[in-house]
Image (cartoon, rainbow, N blue to C red; front, side, top):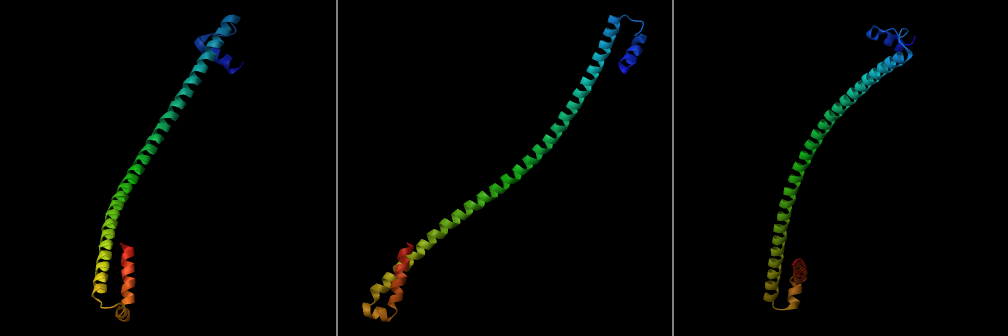
Length: 140
């Protein structure tokens, strides 16, 4: 006698040998269906537990990614503020550099206009003054 027959014999106190063939098949089918339903419920329960576990892992991953994104956003904000500060500082320095160039050109023009002749200007270091004038003109 196999396990299904033994289980059928135990169900409701029926003995398969005393039942008709159709009653015996019906009883075996009923037992088989119940066993299939039990296995199906267990499979469904395992699947549901797996899904709950996966949901938990995904919640943790989501939290981790949200924290990472918050950190990146904060660092990006700091970098953007620093970038803006450096742009402003660069603009100020460009303006100051331009002003210095204008002052140098103005001084050179004053020196050149106050010198009596070009020969004496070269002897007195006028060549350096001309190069400074050229440099200052390139700056502006």
